[in-house]
Image (tube, rainbow, N blue to C red; front, top):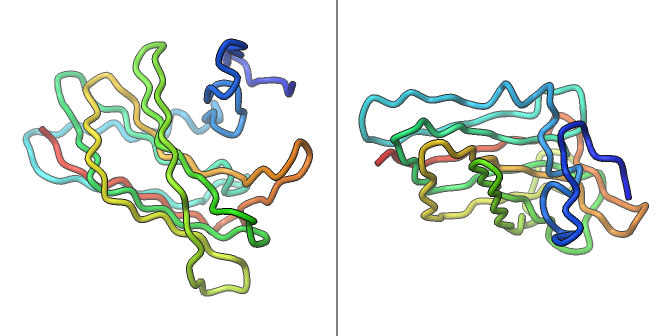
Length: 169
C-alpha cells in the first residue's frame, strides 16, 4: 500500500474510501485556497478554478467551504482537461462532500470531446441538484486514469478547468 500524506487515515474496512486513494486527497499546501464565500442573501453563484499549479492537473480541484447556517445547492458541474493519451474508458471525476469525519464521494464520467490540441480532451458537464449544508466542504476533484497497479494515464499539466454553479438557500 502506498504511504498516505500526513493526517490521512487508512480505513481497511472501506478499502475504496477516498482517504485510501492519495489522488483524492487535497495537497496540504493547496487546502487553504478553498473558496470561503460569505453570501448575504439568496441567488446564484459560480466558483471556478484553472490548473495553474506546478504539479499535474491530476491534482486539479475546486473546493468550497459552505458557511454555517447556509445551504449551497450545486446545480451544474463543469470540468475539462487533456490527458496524455486516450483512456480505454471514460475517466471518473468526483464530487466529494465532507462534514466532520463523514465523507461522501459521487463519481461522474467525463466524456471525450474535441480539443484545441492533439491531446485527448475530456469534458464533464452535468446538471445536478445536490444541496450542501453549512459546515460542509464540497470539492470537485479530477485525477489520473488508473489502468493497473503501476500503470496510469495522466492529465496534461496546465489544461484543467473546473466550475461549480449553484444557488444559495
